[in-house]
Length: 441
Ligand code: 5AD
Ligand code: SF4
Image (cartoon, rainbow, N blue to C red; front, top):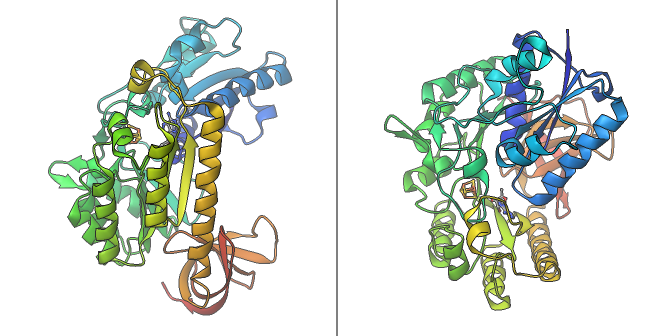
């Protein structure tokens, strides 16, 4: 039996896809291992969204090959496989055996068979993107735990000019609500208490007239599932009914990841985000009017082509106005095939991008800390997720409804339990507290 080791880069969708790959290979007679050194086949499930993720993969490929003296087959999966197929397949110095894109994982066993003597080329590949593949018939091999991820839609049709996802993952397609609900029920039977619904843009979820708000309601009917999260919605045309479902359905966590990308209208237009700063700020006001405690996070890109200092200040002003609970801030990274790469030279100097990212990270750290300090004295309901924190075996780690990490003394609690915790301390990244009540949920 051949042993397979998989390493995952990038976003949660890739983490989920890795579980799909494990499931497909597992049922075709491959054995999975978490020891790279003993694997016959090493798969790298790659990300292409920014250049640094790419570079890491290239150096890993050489490192794996050097360490193993030729006895291992290396496959590149994921977004690099579709976006860099030419470079991957035609570079004779790159020691890989095959590539497979995000819609080709069901054909991996065939691809591996071909490679191992029953078939054709030495370097094999399958990077065809599909309009239909949703893997609705593959149950991902989730490792057991408290939270399970479920991809409810794949692909993206928005074509933000900086983003490679529409090219690497293809067109939008949604799984049926029934199929998603079946998977949620199965996960609930395995003991999961929380599901996180995943999609590149969940607002575009559509299935025979039903939308994402309908899907959330359907999933919330599964009794054992106590918490539902999702990521990410697009700020354009945010459905008002979806807002109401988030605010009113007790199982849907009061947390929205709302990618801003930039705070200036000219830059937003160049990015093809299709909303203005005013529309974005109005949406935030509406969210907060409906649910003042809503936890908001965002993604921001600094140094998009031609972004001036004054335009960057517009992003600063939005951050100061919204005061996000957390933010992921990135330097613009030019990606092959994107509209921005074809139309706009990457002309903001690296030092300027660095200055801008440092500045925004400082602002965010201040806001995260202020927000967390304001929780001291409050009682939060937390779901226990991890025994032992990174720092100590005497602690237990959970998350509150807003997805913030809450650390408590170890006690004799177990994963999956709900507790009321009085917050006693805060850093910019975590909350600490004392248990006031064990909840029956
Ligand atoms: N450069 C920098 N950041 C990017 N992102 C997507 N494409 C790029 C790029 N070319 C960021 C966006 C997106 C997040 C997942 O990654 O902020 O929301
Ligand atoms: Fe990329 Fe924009 Fe689609 Fe998000 S919505 S995946 S940023 S193209």
